[in-house]
Image (cartoon, rainbow, N blue to C red):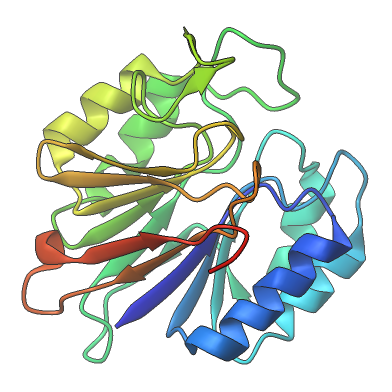
Length: 218
């Protein structure tokens, strides 16, 4: 199975065009949006366009997405959020965290880390794709090449739960992938020339999945 994952669209038409083109070219089974669909404004056209993609979409809010974006997502039959359970045809579940976990930079949405991670913990296991906006501390989270802006509690959570794949964004400078123990962390931001990432899932062993980061000229 194949996931096409992006983050940080920020209501940019050009980025939406790239998403549509890559969905048509790659034919993924699922599209995942790891936050920041919009740029502080409601921008309903973003959700409407994503909901018209020819494959299911799973999306969470990032720090630039207002609460109205959640309502727009909930009203769109083509987009899922929160939790997507495992099925006979999909050998993995998808669990998502809205907003930005506390970081040392100003953010519109900041969540109580302990409360939110405890709430989602029962949903996350070794057959779960975890979708967050903020990266874990020290993993693809460097701002200006040297300041870590990730979440320390999320790092500990991932180390404990060991999901096979974690999809994140938020730090535009650090698209890419990196291993954290058995877990593959993928920053699928559309910043800095990235066009997101493609995750080729191995249904027999999700830890053996392949990830390809798409750049300006795939």
